[in-house]
Amino acid sequence: MSTRHYKVLGIALVILCSFTVAPERIAWQPNKTLSWADFKGSPNGDGSFVASTSSGMSQSYVIDGKGMLDKNETYVVAHFYPEYSWYREKDTTARLLKHEQTHFDITEIHARLLNTRIQSYNFTSNSKSEVKALYEEVEKQRRAMQRTFDEETNHSINREVEKKWEEKIARLLLPQ
Image (spheres, one colour):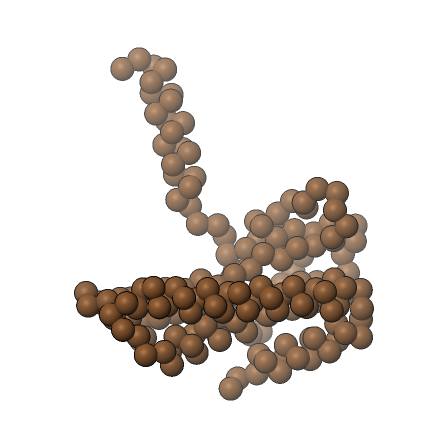
């Protein structure tokens, strides 16, 4: 094999390895809030938005050989993704950071909802597709709530509505 083949193989291995590395993520915690240092991504173009939070729900579960989900081995966690979250430094305010934290909090609410639905669901031997359907249903609701939050607060411009949302989210985050 020539030297050139080794270089191509080396580049291919680097590319393959880069696809298997999971992005950095921060799990939601009740007593930890985001800081601007957590936002490590680059702003998207010259748009009018000042910041963007990337968050989502991660889940892990065990399905036995008969296709049955083990609820005791099921975990749902809300994560914040620093490398996909960004802000424009010149426009940062504490109020805007709170708005972005509220987006992350909305994800936590839906992670709890997904966990509750999984724990109460009567799974069959088709558990994998059933848990996927539950996830898709809750994810659709999460995205809708995120959009409604931004629309109603006009992306943090309407302070009165923002305050109402913060109070609502705080109530939803209380232990049940």
